[in-house]
Image (tube, rainbow, N blue to C red):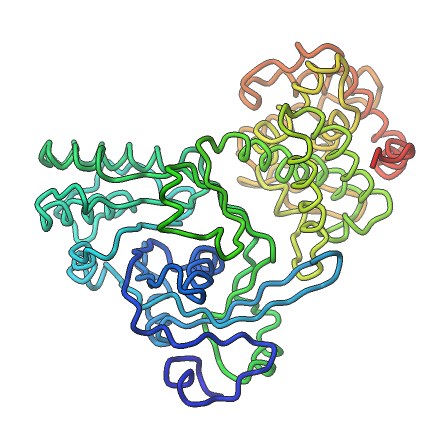
Length: 512
């Protein structure tokens, strides 16, 4: 079978009719240097740039840099930057699939093999944007990094070297500063990256003029990205290969939904006209409301509903949403408790929530509940507790299902026994392995050992958990009635079982 590359692209190959094949874009200049060549950026930013190029609105390509020693750069170069992207999901309730060959990447560079070529990109005046996605851990300070390293170990170290080379090459020209747009999933990612770059410049003894140039003539944007990218479809690849008629080692898959919130100067939207091609990109002066919306509704719905669904015997988000009881449970949590707890425009919240429900029901994505349960305590603190606290503050009472979700979370650890750094636990369906921070696992194992099956003992377990400041950074027993209510639910789960308890909880239905 022939392979996807420029030769195949120009050979007159008979591509499938349901595959969108772009017009040649080989001669477009490189305008973006991108740290990260993985599935997410190729299904998100590079796909967006491709859409702008098709309309003649950006007219630039991306040179990708491999941020670690092992990666996909060789495959990218073998395929001349081309790859197939398949986006799948529900659109207006109907399964939809969009297939397209993406041509926005010009080439890849491995800085561990070709550091000089990487630095030569800094000399190109047409490259003015830096994009990155090097995992959440990528934006971190490494005090061992040195400018003499070729390359420095960390992503901020590589970026600092790149910017310093550009500063020297253009003699500190204010017009040659970069627009840096990180996509790593940490709060205030641009601010954090800029801080580390300046710290490294200080550590390395770089000139004061360079630090001033970084501060005043380079723009570091804070962003929020949202798209589930499922990547290379290894379980379906043979079937897809037959349908496409060619071999693609970089084939990528993701959901239809996408959102990119960028906090920064609106005039940049003229250089990056994403919205002009209909992309869901929001330029804003303050991304806080959008982050709150995502964390509380999307992430919060996951974290608050999954423990009960998993104990119920379900295994994937799709199963949860299609289940008569659990699907209603999730919708009620979102519309009856999370949204009322947020002081933002209700139409904005409801519209986003509707898209979340559709995404959760995506038949093309198998999102396993056990993977969502990973590090549940820390996720619950960030994603669910604010909704409980704000709901109680606004209405003077506890949100029933979110309160129950705490009891369900605690129950996940109930019959667990530590085995090394993980916990072997049990639900009615059988044993499973629970992964969390070791102190959290140790605490739950110890706490549940004191449970004697009584209502009073269940309330004591709840009080012990809610009073653990290591997990919550505060004593949640101070929320009036919270411990008693969680304890009552713990007792119900123990006596009635998770299924009867959830069934009774949602019997009244949801408000919309």
